[in-house]
Image 1 (cartoon, helix red, strand yellow):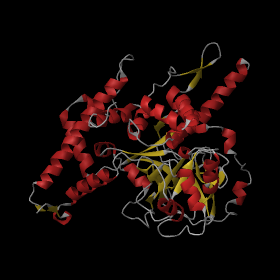
Image 2 (cartoon, rainbow, N blue to C red):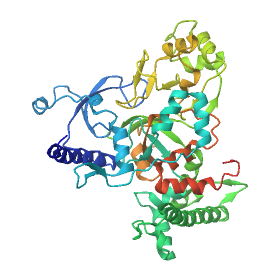
Image 3 (cartoon, rainbow, N blue to C red):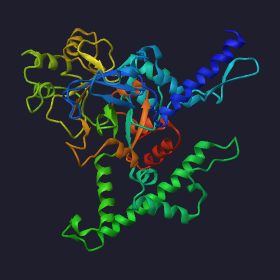
Image 4 (tube, rainbow, N blue to C red):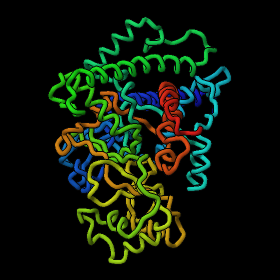
Length: 467
């Protein structure tokens, strides 16, 4: 490549980088209109089972639905179909930009990075060793290219990380009574570590130590506030015979208690996002780190295939239950995918492309759903291993109409309860069975920064772990 060609390529690349970074930060680009077709799932409460045309960016985040295929035909005449495969692994490319900085050009005309590229250290050596035993191919993929980072909005194929209650109150975008009270406490404390915008002037300062110190300070303050307020509720005389009537509490006390109970129910969840529609508020995810059992008997196989409500009866041959037991009777990975739709047939997730009956959950993710017959037959024949697949009973559903108590996912994100993450598929597909280091900590440490600091703080409480 000549120097002139290289100099022209850099601005074009920077333009594309700007778009990716804008998407990663949650910036909506309304003027970008890239036609894509997404087929709805009849099993999802948020979909109709019909084909819907959507114009979207490759993130599968920002789109506008068109119920009529002929709508805006005049505007669409000049548009070209975008083959997302032609973009390559753009998620990995974006991650490399976030990790390594924007490319530039030195005096010799060669492209350089604005940050020194350093090889990421392993955050969970024992977890990697376990993955090696379970799935050699995925382990190699993980070892050579695992990554994770924060994004501004939920992405299909990405993760949702349940944040500690202390972090929820600190980061919550929609400021309520308790968020503001914590903010006032921190401002009155006068500790410079409280500043969210503070950056050290010295280049050689250990940023990890500074970040941990800063996060540890506000986390401790939030922890004390929560403990003190909950204790005050308990000692207020509103608890009768060990029973607390929420109606006896004022609005702010009920709000804190509700947040506390919700946090306990969803403690350190890591979820894989299957579908997301910010317009309707409908989203579905699977909890990755709630294993149930490591083997499948005939009763469980029948439940996985047909559901306890019988909605899957007749979907498979009469002897298919026995085939499932033959394939997964001695070794399997079954998880509680969420509190909703647990009476329906299970979800089958894997990373095997071109498996008959399976489909990618979003273009470019290389994460697939379905393909029961081919999966079972492949395991029986020895083509695949049982731990190449994951079974999930139930789902985490966000549907303002069907589950109004949960609301929309975006509300949870804005409230600071969940942090959306993008990640390598090896992180989303790996099994979560007897991990020496819990998946929640592994994911946050890969993200680095304040999330890594939060993991360190929470890990100090785990006297049950030997790391």
